[in-house]
Length: 121
Image (cartoon, rainbow, N blue to C red; front, side):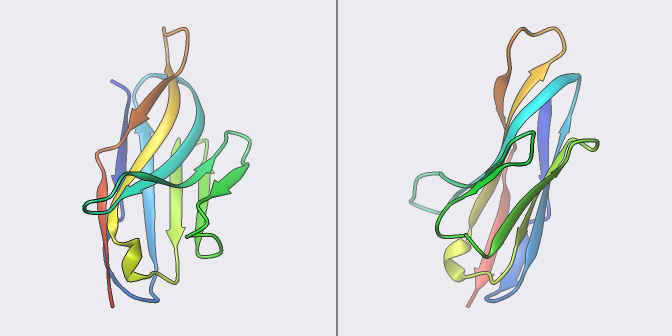
């Protein structure tokens, strides 16, 4: 079974840092785009950052210069380094990836279970 498992969420003070990790597991032929989304209470889920298999990145304006997305293809893991955290970064963070399982003819889109990030002022 192909799945994404996040870790690294928790509580941080404003101005602090946290690092999220998301590991893909299962029988996977290829992993294309990987990314992070977040959803705050009462708000829609929004894109935070994405990274292609070649390493190209894109960020939401609200996190540019503060967050860094990276990936380790050998470990099938994507990371989100969050610095200069603000209370408005508080949300459930979800990992997302386009992955093609062995035996499938095309990639599917997968979500992790989410990890809570809370930033106190």
